[in-house]
Amino acid sequence: MPDIETLMDVWPEEFESLLDSVSLPPPELDLSLLEYVKTLCAILDIPVYDNPIESLHLMFSLFIEFRNNPHFQARLGGGMGGGGGAEEKGGEIGGRNMNFGGADVMQIDQN
Image 1 (cartoon, rainbow, N blue to C red):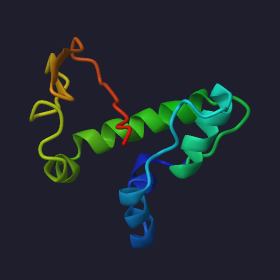
Image 2: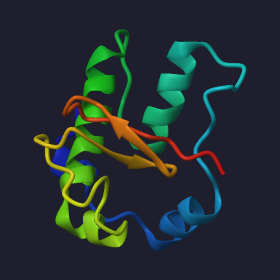
Image 3: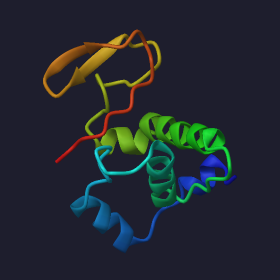
Image 4: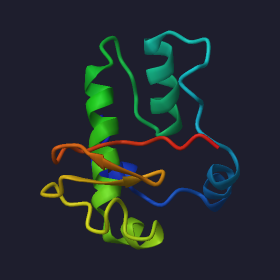
């Protein structure tokens, strides 16, 4: 498995531009859960072997690293609730105040 630092390397400018104009595959696709996991991991350059658990763990660890990275917090306007730390009890998503008990929450925006 690649390490987090390798996965956080800067992507080619063409790929970054594509991500700005194309959304990730929605979960409503006619795919099994395993196929959907493989699709998302392939986009992120995370290999999937016989058991996808390690790949999923790496994908969610990567999400947490991006969410807590100061560069991306500034780019997204401060992230959830301004600080994004684990001590926070919630935040505002889509104009609704949400309480997640300090859990790390991943939101996929559907445009």
